[in-house]
Image (cartoon, rainbow, N blue to C red; front, top):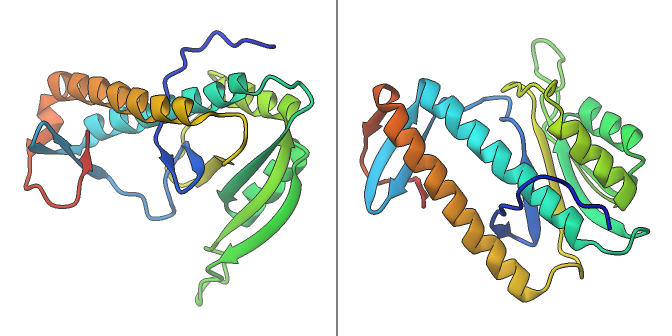
Length: 202
């Protein structure tokens, strides 16, 4: 089995899919609230950029973990991909995805006729092509563009046991907590204490 030299730090399983997002939506947030040990902080500016990079690193490592959990070289992996219509078409073409379901949300802007919706596809990808996805996303040439929605998830499958899923949740929490604590220490000028309302709890 191919092994990748990337640490296997893992994310929460949410609604049966491992969420892999490397950017924001069309209307990007510029801040996030986090709850660390009962104290809430608003992360802004440079600290927010660090936070998004931390999320991207976590999610890429999740994908690597998923890849390494699949021992059969000819495996076919169920995925969900969300993006613009063009991005979805490009993703399907580039990685030879077999589409099993296609849904479009949103539509054209009234004044410009620009399409502002997003496309959600479910499909199947080979292990070989999943490795290509990982290689492309690991490339130093990859640029995170906050105006581009790029979201890939691996659906529930038989490759992970319940014990492995529990480890995913635990390791993801530890990874994010450690990373957020470093951001709080190093980016004090762009962090402020906030009310504990809607926030990410770690």
